[in-house]
Amino acid sequence: MGLSNALVSELASIVGAEAVKSGDLDRHLYSKDAGVIRGEVSVVVLPRTARQVASIVRTAVAHGLAVVPRGAGTGLTGGAVPEGPAILLVTTRMDQVDVDAANRTAWVGPGVINLDLSNQTASLGIHFAPDPSSQAACTIGGNVANNSGGPHCLAEGSTVNHVLAVEFVTAGGEIVVAGSGAPDPPGLDVRGVMVGSEGTLGIITRILVKLIPNPPAIRTLLIAFPEVRGAAATVTDVIASGVVPAALEMMDQPLIRAVENFVHADLPVDAAVVLLAEVVGHEAGVDVEAELIERIATDHGAFQLRRAADADERELLWKARKSSFGAIAQIAPDYYLHDTVIPRTKLVEVLEQIYQIAERRNLVVLNTIHAGDGNLHPLFAFDASDPEAVTQVNQAADEIVEISIAAGGVLSGEHGIGQEKRDLMHLVFSPVDLDAQARLRDAFDPEATMNPKKILPAGARCFDFGRPIPEGAWL
Image 1 (spheres, rainbow, N blue to C red):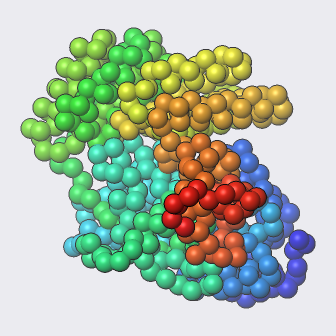
Image 2: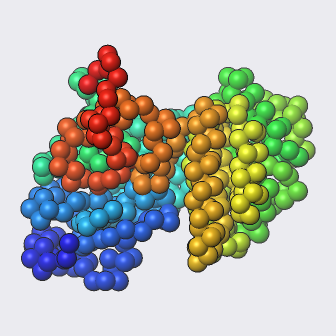
Image 3: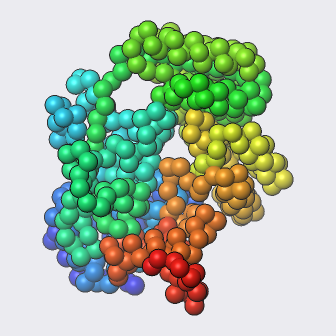
């Protein structure tokens, strides 16, 4: 569908001409996220208020266009990439923050940068727990849309556990609030449905988040192992002991070497794998838990144990962990970062299979893992100008999904489904499951205006393509 002057003029009347981007370069720049999928953007619009978003949605419907929400563009699954003509609604200017220190909550706009919120509330002794590796750039709206967590969600729970309410604009252009600051609100949990919906049910315009106290004491441990098996056994035994660290992260040797050359954090480059463990709480308690982790790690062959001596060293260690993706630029011009989840006890065998896939396809793979909850992030470094390399990377990614599911895992931990894993949903969900999800989506957006062709594969409805409905299924 060609871009009409009438559409641009209508959008400009809503948000101002400076907030409408319709030039070829702008549309090209916004046509992909941080992943490898590129789409078609008809026009880019940057609203500031929920009322403007509602007007944009009504305008899109009038012009027969879809609406695709986007935050900072740090997503990796093509979730914010239009598949077909669409208005790309960018929320980065919706960055208002209203903190209620007494209730330890804040109403925030979807364009608020994740790390900025915690920096803003640091003087109040509270912070927002979810901390994706991209937290210095990613927005809270994107975190909510994909239920994206981060290293420090192991003990505190993923993003959905930190969202009390969401304000969103429906496909009909209405502004609705789901949830509240009150504990245990009655009725169906529409708030929970919105978290992780990837913009397919509505456009989130404000979020009521829970803020938690900054811990009085922190111990950060770097533990090196000569083999992956010892590190994996340590993770399993630490959790089994009853200690749930604030974070329990793993990096393999190829990644350790790339990161050390990039950050210079004195990482043990001769280790097959390192664990970065962190415990928080009161002074006496964190020392006891740190000693327990060190003892378990020693029993499983750890050859180096190091505690961060101060806040500066702790910050450097976390900088190393969160610089993983930037460090890849030393190896290749492009990367494909994957995301699946497996049971912790299957870590060794799945990681071995990932290395075998990479070797068979002549690919460079580096691994960073939220080891405490089994969230894998294999990272392929490659040159996207080489069509064969692109083919091999995409096929390797699908193989990793298949071996993860076979090990009892799931499709994604925090990146979302988007376009990347949409056609693999059948590996986890039955036809009845997919039909139920499609019906829920239809209830919110019967005309498929909101971010269409994401999450659910074609034919998700049981009656599509004449698929029979299993006898006794509730529909």
